[in-house]
Image (cartoon, rainbow, N blue to C red; front, side, top):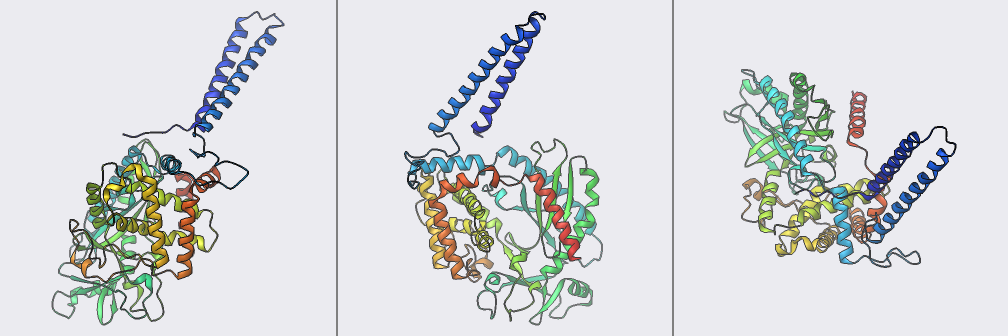
Length: 520
């Protein structure tokens, strides 16, 4: 059941204004009912009005004072002497810290299940109609181009129950279908490739095997020339060429669904070279009761079986050192979201019903975002990359499998969150946090792991960062935890609040269009 907290900073001023308006209406009605020729009528009505306003003001100040004394102010519950102006701020007790974290979670991070459910349903309808239209237009007899399989896969934090703040961004995999009788041979590059940049060690290549021996038949040459590149003497599927085709294909198919959706919402597709295709949805009516604009990243995915997908690398990962093996456009990323969702489902069964492991992840993501607002560049840009949501989730998986799962009861929220911070601090100092599925032999047997993941080389998620950056990130992470009450109070003020989703939608869409025009 959803529990909504009362915002006293908004409630009591509204009550004061309402009561003042009622007093004014009462005095106006009383003056009209009195004798119009009486000279003393206005004066006699003004005195009760002033008295009533003064009493309301005093009551408001008294209530605010009582709320602040009881821990309901913006600082939250704090130990005695923590607000002393004569000395440094004392560290909060465990109960006070937990109360502060709970308040931070409820007021800034927690999503309403009602709003999230409506948003996910709206995204599913629109993406489903677009995918079906794109599949229908791609079914041409004798065509040797990729087609859409006709379904989509929902991934990301919104579908794993640990998204924070607002349900305004979703990730959707759109599986592709290659020409028949072509066999895929994926291979992880690993650390043995000479001259390979650390951030590309988890990348894959996808060689294509011709249906008739080693020679490519004449009928498959258009597909080979349009979607493949030569790599070490073999034809490999190009992520860049597939991504370019996917963006153009969906752009052409968008008009088929616009007329059916124009009364419900405004839809735009933002496609820039080298970036994921983004579907922007802005509701027009009460079809989505909460009127939240949404950005949906549509990611083309090549199915490998066992719920594994190859996806195009992110733009930030498309950097390689001189002498790296093969062109970058032949590299793919491996998506293991379905395995992660299965692991989360298994952990939910193993932990107590009131487990706080997902809440710990959400609070840590919130603290990371708040701290990032006060960091100076260039480290501010590295902060969110070092402590990415995937890194935080991987650290949580590893920590959950180390100790007794009964210790993750809700009442131990502060202690478990501190354990997560310290474990992540140790990983940063040791420069090692291994990918949870690639080459990991300690995955629980209850979670089936495909053969491709078992045989892949282990990958260090922190290998892309130098030692000074990781040391500074470890220091700032521990400092963020120790100064959490101060950081929450400082960066939760209206000055640092995020822009509204509608404003971000308009500004982001305009900037992306401008960047596309500049690149063209």
